[in-house]
Image (cartoon, rainbow, N blue to C red; front, side, top):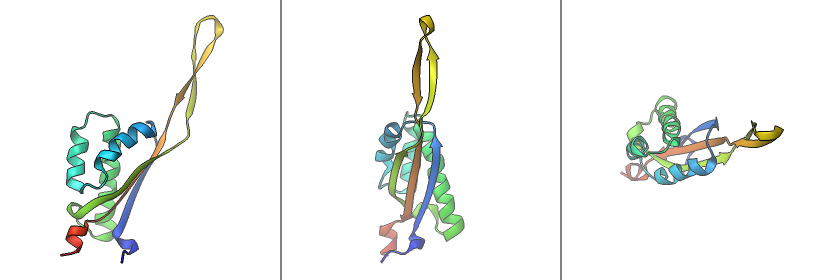
Length: 121
């Protein structure tokens, strides 16, 4: 039986990157434990890694401070990026024209919980 105390989450809202590019990184760390995910995020060559790493560290801090769980015992249960509002800008072009520029944002959610392997011991 799973209690509410076992599930800890952190959300980064209005992150200035597209959800598809964030999901590309989140797919790599989903299901991994905390230390593996931090190492992966540190060495992957994507811009989204720094922001996702901060959210993961925030979730680990929530686990330690609010629930007393050591961060090395955490496993990433769910990781997803939802679409946020799009900032719309205009690029001036020749002969008085203007081309629209869409700057996407996303909301990244990481849900971590106590590693099942450690739970069963």
